[in-house]
Amino acid sequence: MGRKVVMSQNAGKTGPYSHAADADGFVFLSGQTPIDPATGQLVQGDIAVQTRQSFSNLFHVLEEAGLTPDDVQKVNVYLADMNDFEAMNAVYAEQFTEPYPARSTVGVTALVGGAKIEVEMTARRSR
Image (cartoon, rainbow, N blue to C red; front, side, top):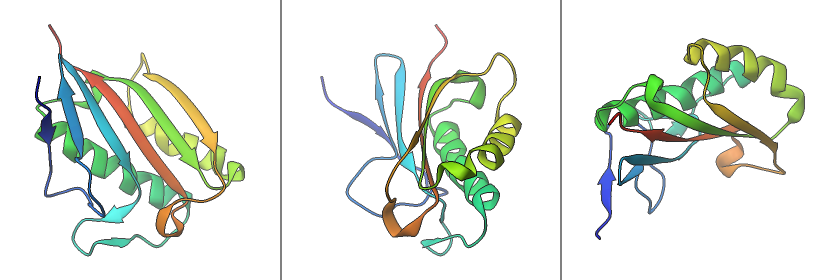
């Protein structure tokens, strides 16, 4: 079976990857750092600003795939500094409604381009 990819002009792209791959009703969204798609540059600001941009990029990819945040089943959050958890979590809570998707949050040594956060998601099409 071939790979069905999803790309959005409204999400940053910095390398040889697809924004998402659609497979048997599941849509696997690549991790998004807080890249401003208009400039191709990392947005400047604190973790709240960078978290909002990462979700904006991801939600544009979801929209391109014909999905909404309500279709998201699992979210993985990577933080360059776990001291940013509470501020990230406050912005995260604004992105979804209950019941919230499953989530993992992992502290990492560094992220590409000096980003403070990267977020990836898995969504599922309603049957």
